Length: 71
Image: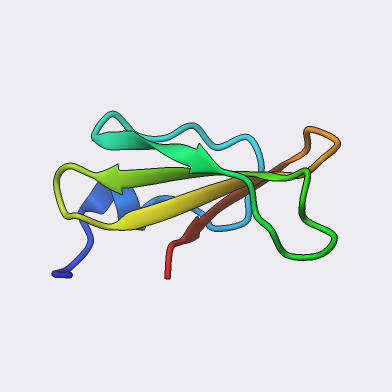
């Protein structure tokens, strides 16, 4: 991956309630299988400008845990 675009650089990881920027395309979601996270949801995003991959997790109670860079 090259350098992140300015919009991706402005994302604060782990901050709840942050909306994806206009070029952050939703790639679908998965439900983690790790013990204790079975009812959570991970939404996958990829930036159309720089290619950065992001995850946004929502826990089983519906609490937004914010964005984090995908491995």
